[in-house]
Length: 202
Image (cartoon, rainbow, N blue to C red; front, side, top):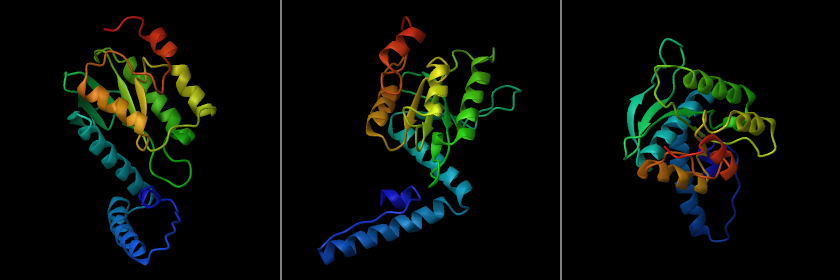
């Protein structure tokens, strides 16, 4: 099921024929939904990632304040501007797609686009307290150059990075959606990195 939703090949086994039939029916439903979400290959996979991100954001307690907000005259836009239950706002960057090769932030072009957009947002004077939540099908691996590049930018420019299938990441997202969040919760960022960028919570 998860493999098909992520456009990956999967394999499963069961010795009970009744359970096999149940699995086949469920898989058929996922196949039909995947065809609707990803009708144009990778471009469809991007749309699928955006739709899934929106669903998770709303389930986490956020409301969508604006879709495709543009950052002044810069030409930069994000997928969403969201607001939590305490009226705190974030720009949401849905980074990458559900592809079988280099999904999400494991692709170099996606990493550089994400970092470039965050820098432009941070340097735009008309944006008060710019904060970015990155939501992605897959984060870069811990020791990869992509992870090191994002780490070099710090949580001031990228408030947090959430992997759509990671339970601990989704718990942090629910925290941001329902609680006051003056600074990131530890997870993607370490406590030391957070304290360095946010010496006092505002």
